[in-house]
Length: 436
Image (cartoon, rainbow, N blue to C red; front, top):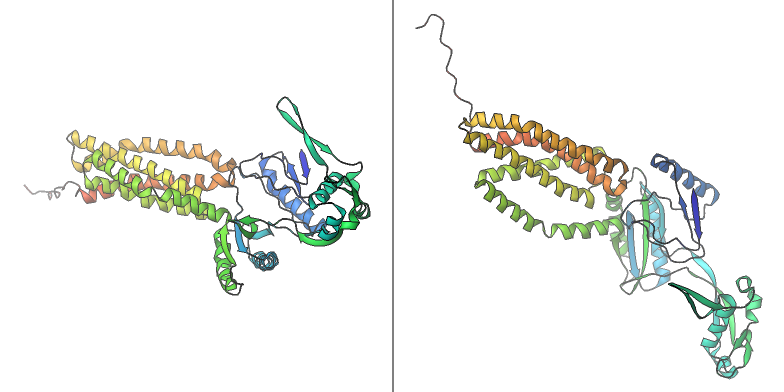
């Protein structure tokens, strides 16, 4: 099934969707596929249709992301003059389109559209007894309708509009002969006597950020595209071009890159405190610096599995994989604590250190593996159907946990034996035959 909206998007229906501003040249379509596996095929067909049948249209197609509101690539350009901003944005769009891995390059101002500007002759208007407000009200009544009030029915508020018949089908000549009603004198004056209508090409919208005019150039990524690679190629070019821009014009990064940096900064800010608390708890648990060192040493090694997994599955290291790494650290630390605690129990039973290490590994082998595989199997649905937002985190935890389990069962006993000088018992040399 499908549904379409012309002139604006629907209300927010997904976590990653924000309704666009009303625009006569904008259309939004929702397509419900029979299976998630069909999404890539449908997206490619729509892109092909738009390229062949509507080459001048900006066609953007994407599956629901289940989170995240920014585009992968966003470059914000701020300045004073709209025409200069449009020129710079055009250069950036051309450069961005040349970079491999990008598609659907656009800006948020949109193309210029033809508009009719009412140029009021204030001297004539004052002589005729009409004001700019009178002209605006008369034109609004004829074209769109004047809001006279609202009708309430229960919790619903319905606006009451007053407008002339055929107001949606007015021609330019008909608008020029509209009578302007003076609210002060009650006189009626033809619009042509006090104003003239001038056609102009203007921007569909001009956005501001922090009170400055800002145009945002954005881009989606292809299946093989990587945001970090694109920005690594684009950033030096932007720095070089910015040197030739007029004074007061600057660029900044937005989109997923900015959101990831801000979110990571908020998390990293408290990592030292949380790490200190973990160290204190480990020291209190084991009452040993060496055992605490063993537990902490497993965390950086588990990162190897995360890196390998992200490289194999071609996933970028963003905010969600970073959260997965933090969660993985807790799981790996827990496995190491369980194994070291079992070694202490075996030593308490009077066993030799080497026997305690071996028996602890044998007894904790099955529980650690079961905990690992139950976690991995529980994360597989998140990887399969979690969308782009959750796939990176699922891959990071799965691969890091599988690698970390090996680290726990092999590295922890070896490091324990090294730090606590555990050596196998000395064996007596065999007695030569016939020797007594």
